[in-house]
Image 1: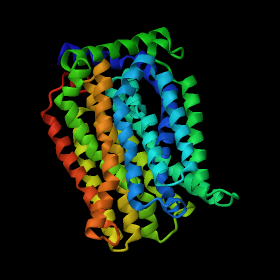
Image 2: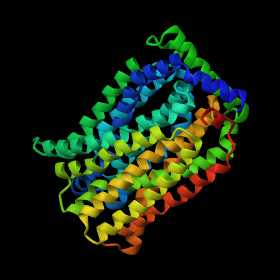
Image 3: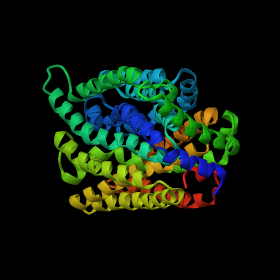
Image 4: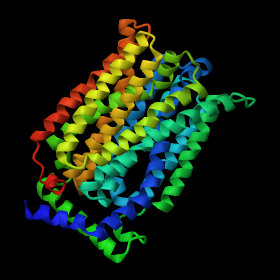
Length: 448
């Protein structure tokens, strides 16, 4: 056992550090989860408006797919600059700014007039939201040691199932209510109300978030010292054995390796999420609305437990690699299963496969992010994490276009061929995750 490892374990075993971690999690995690809940809701609620936008504003299936995906182009272009600005001005101001501006853009979807305005607003939504997710990943890496970080990532990831579990019925309900308002359509009310929720969340974030342990009034002097000491130790290891600076991070092979893994994951996530209302509607024969929204909440409800408990259990490098590999395989198999169920008119089995797919891709996300945050620090973290998230999220651009293109090329009557195509990528990610055993990272000594 190295001296660094022993010192780290001694620090992590100290009651004062455990107290500091508990207090930081209790203070910061609820606000971060709320931000991501509203973020995920505002980027995916477009699925509830797909049919209505076609009927009311003439948005074709191809234009909808382009708009759904172009969000990630704007997101990718401004991701790294946003991360670097967050490092400069601090998470408190920058995360609040992100939420407020994307909320305003999201509310403007209520005024869409056709295909052009729809696509432009989707691009602007990506521009304004760029930096939220990687900014939070960096923020958590500054507050929590590697040993507990995947658990904190898992708590943050709970925002996705919470967003879909609560947000899908909310979106369906707002559409039903909005259709009863004279002069308005339900989808307009949905976009405006949910956009304003983001604005309110951004204002709240300004008052709740804190830029680093040293400024945390809720920690005692000893707790601040203990937390800063263990984080400084980990940063020293990262600086000595990881890339230094922006350019070094952008050239680093491990950064690009995890970018590809994350790209495959995002194809699965958004390939399922964007079309989930229509897929469940097709499986059950129900019109998109409150009933479908309630059904969609079921997979995300179970996803909460999968995400939290697997994240808590994956506290060593070996466990993270094993969990990650199995979860990627499970994601691919279950996406295949959902396509088969749709083709064979098996709604009950279809919902089971969708539920297992959601549980799998939710739980694997925190595992993936535990790797780059173990060897990236400072400006290298801002650039490297930004690159992984921005290019990886292009999977969200590719997914709807790939699904639509495959369905049109094969003339699939149920759309199952497009789903099969999306299910291939998680198997690629599984192989890459298993192969991470060849990586030798000094910072992993702090975990094992």
